[in-house]
Image (tube, rainbow, N blue to C red):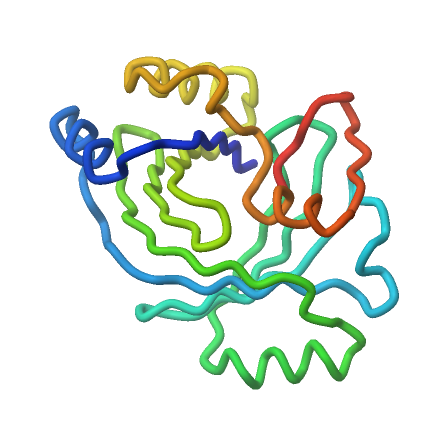
Length: 188
């Protein structure tokens, strides 16, 4: 399972510098565009455990189709990726099988690793600057504790911590409701 927590930040270059000093290895810096798709007619349907979405991610280094399904654990979801060659044609295929593009997110991403953690330092055109930390694990509680400890080391205020994914934040702005399995906020 993928466990992610993000936090709003003020200066992503400063955060990058601190993380590099802590040993973060920068993997890449790139612009990404994420296109989210839902079945036609279900664009505003409440989302909860088991709800799924498809995402096409366009990057300079490759394009991907991702299936993401909500779980009943805050900050954890099931995810499957496959590389695709043509973003436009994949969008056409999804349209033909009854899906519609419901959200587009533009981001500038600095990606790296620090130990067992994936770190993304993002500038989201629609939301601002964030740090996103992820761990792949079946032990959700331990992974969350590790991520929260890192955010505390970075002196990021608890009030800036966000358990929702970027897509969920933006979907909620569109009026989409979420039904959480554990009565807490959950990532997309």
